[in-house]
Amino acid sequence: MTSTVLVFLDPAHPDGRVEDASKPQLFVTDLGATRGDGVFETLLVMDGHVRKLPAHLRRLASSARLLELDVPEHEAWERAVVTALDEYQREVGPLQEVVVRLVATRGVEGAHAPTCWVSASAPHPNAKRQREHGIDVILLERGYDSAIGERAPWLLLGAKTLSYAVNMAALRYAHGQGADDVIFTSSDGKVLEGPTSTVLVAHAETDDAGRVTAKRLVTPQLDSGILPGTSQGALFAAAKEAGWELGYGPLEPEDLFDADAVWLISSVRLLTPVNRLDGKAIGADPELVRALTAELAVLFDRIA
Amino acid sequence: MTSTVLVFLDPAHPDGRVEDASKPQLFVTDLGATRGDGVFETLLVMDGHVRKLPAHLRRLASSARLLELDVPEHEAWERAVVTALDEYQREVGPLQEVVVRLVATRGVEGAHAPTCWVSASAPHPNAKRQREHGIDVILLERGYDSAIGERAPWLLLGAKTLSYAVNMAALRYAHGQGADDVIFTSSDGKVLEGPTSTVLVAHAETDDAGRVTAKRLVTPQLDSGILPGTSQGALFAAAKEAGWELGYGPLEPEDLFDADAVWLISSVRLLTPVNRLDGKAIGADPELVRALTAELAVLFDRIA
Image (cartoon, rainbow over all chains, first blue to last red):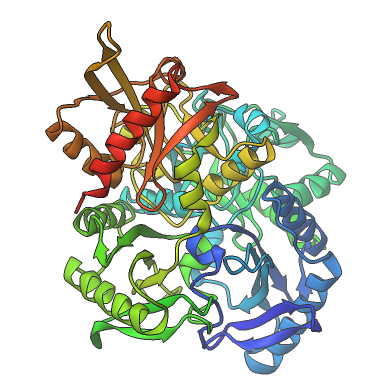
């Protein structure tokens, strides 16, 4: 806890107000704490560089709009991130690998002003282990059909809200089954997303000599009630430049079982291969999985 | 804010630890604030009496079990409530009408101990106005089918969690439509619940002289993925003793439009008549609505 740096966005402090995260800083009447009513982003700093900050700020703004939550402009967040990272270097250590969280809650009950902060801390050691060794995943029903996001905006399906109890419960359920993570499916049988990640699927065509001649990278339809992945978006752009074909679902579980490789991708854990799905090995050729993972990981590492 | 009394449950303070709610008391790394990961109850004190405390404590324990959250035993909550109400009398005023919240979060990240508190404050003036004048309600899809709660425990449908962003968004959506509140429906067309209340429906049979000869009180099936209402449970018991027939769904929207009266009931707002649903007046006979409301309100007022 002492290794968490905290900066509140505060109109009286244009660069943000640094506070001590090892002391209480939130009111018990904050609607973020009592109703999970707010939005957030988690992003990664690598070797001093904040990855995909504009994409995260755009998604934060979009989530806030869906919640009718008035949050500060991008520049205020950017300045608070700079302050937080300065402070992190001074108080904790070098910016080799740092997790930055942006949080905006609806604020204290009756105050009608959001509570906004930036925190910076070291990543959980699990993240690195999982992306190096891969993970076992189970499919779980999310309960919604894949068209409901469009017709029921009050379900906030495209917003990254603080109301993550179900995502956390799904992960606990997976751990109870001996798995590491979850891929949610819709009531109409479509592949959606992980509780904290986006699903990516690869198909490769090879010639008689086993050389890869075409590569296709697919992710679930963006309008199926999932969160638009900032990592998926960035990797897709890079993969396209590198000659990959791109596709946007619909995907069904069979498409995952038939794939040459499946990954969960997120800003902090990065590109993490799925070894087994519901107990079945994914990717007929482990060499090919490794090669595709290595290729995409290099592309993803280079992302600004 | 100064009129909120705050008592943390704390093993070192058997009767609870009184803190100043007008000062920050929560860590920004509390999983209640960052993930909506926790459970809560809201209950009402009337004329010095805490209404339905055992039922609320039972539901809190049941919610916590669904979240695999280890919360203190009932006695610790009871003692903290007593401390909070003592403090409220001393600092704020008499216990005529006080809202008490019980909250348990998963605690600070990495600490593996829940953060638990009791707060006491004055009710929002809206509650009284709404139960006296009735409310306009719209039907909104909840997105789930009514059987999913049973087969997908990770969706936490029977738990009262801190992840209330969707409930709050549905209420905002209703307000944007000029309505006061929402009744959720399932994807298979069943009536579920309000975002913060339980649905009650009455049918009365009358003789030729217009005298009520039989009264039936119905609520949606308890196993349809809704929260078991402590108020509904208590009122059902009282209504049964007073000669009402009881029924447990399934209910469809038509059953609401055809009813003699419809209410939303909750611990704080109490029994609140629905005047209009999706713009259509509910209850063909306003006199009968008033009589049934008055009768049930008296029964509900008497509840311990």
